[in-house]
Structures are given as C-alpha cells and as structure tokens.
Length: 194
Image 1: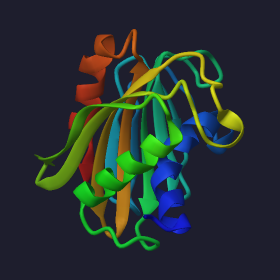
Image 2 (image 1 turned 135 degrees about the vertical axis):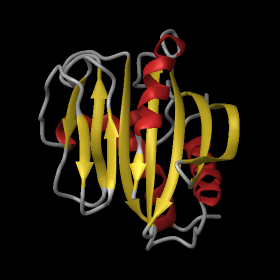
Image 3 (image 1 turned 90 degrees about the vertical axis):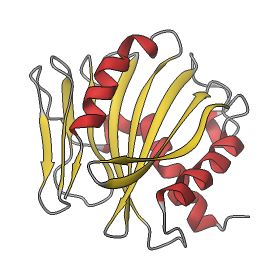
C-alpha cells in the first residue's frame, strides 16, 4: 500500500484538472503556441488554432494546457503537461509511476476502465509509458463524489528526467476523444525533453 505522500504525488497530476483555471496564470492566444522551459529542458507545441495557458515559473504542477477554447469556457478536450518531483517516492522508472498512478486512479474513480494497460515506448530517445483510461464521472473522494457531468477518456504519457516525472494528459469526453486523436498525436510528437 502507498503511503500518503506517494498517493498525493500520484493523484496530483490528475486532480489539477479539476482546479486548472485557478491554478495557473492565464496567457491565452489563438495561434500555434510552443511552450519552452529552458530550466527544465522541455519544449512542446500545441495544435494549430488551439489556445494555450502556461505557467512559466514553477518546476512542478501544471506547466501548459492546450484547449480549443479559453480555459474559462467549456472545453470537451484538452492537452496538459504536468511536472511532479519524484523525491517523495521510490519510483525510478516511468512504468513504476504509471502502475502506481493506475492503482490510485482506481481508488478515486469508481467507474474507471483501463482501456490500454501501461506500456513502455521510446520517444526521441527517451523511455516513456503510455496508458489509456476512461471514466471519472463517479468520483469517490472528498467533496467531488459524482460531480462531473460526463465521462472522460485520457491517454496519459509519462516520462522521467532529472528526478522529475512529466505527465502529458490528452483528455476528452468519451464522445469526442477519437475526433481529436490527430491533435493529440501531433502534440505528443512535438515533446522534447533535453
């Protein structure tokens, strides 16, 4: 069983989605946007015509979110890059982080379905893990029990660099997730971890 600090780390990458509009500074435009953080050695470009909301200063938490509409408007899909330090955990590989996150997500969402089990892949010479899950309408933690109006489908990519885990969430409602696969894949392909 995970201790409290490990569980907080694992679920923090997902829970930020519920608080996103207040968690990061707004910097939105309707142009192709490339987020670059030279301190972290990371660069990613969002889909053409999507809005970008970024946070330039912190080394952890949400770094950038791409969405078809401004974040304070309804969005049926988004792509978000989150950083989380591994200092509180014993995890050494992206697969260990992914497996732990799946276990934590199953305790949070009663209706969670793993569509694709965590699988290792290589991107730009960097080992990563991808898994896909669906659900999230039936939340079983705290004040958020049953509060979401629609189920989400999420493709999660996890990388580790310099004792930091990077989570790239490609998320959409179950009704429109597949319609945005091209944008999701192009954004994942643009990710550079130096």
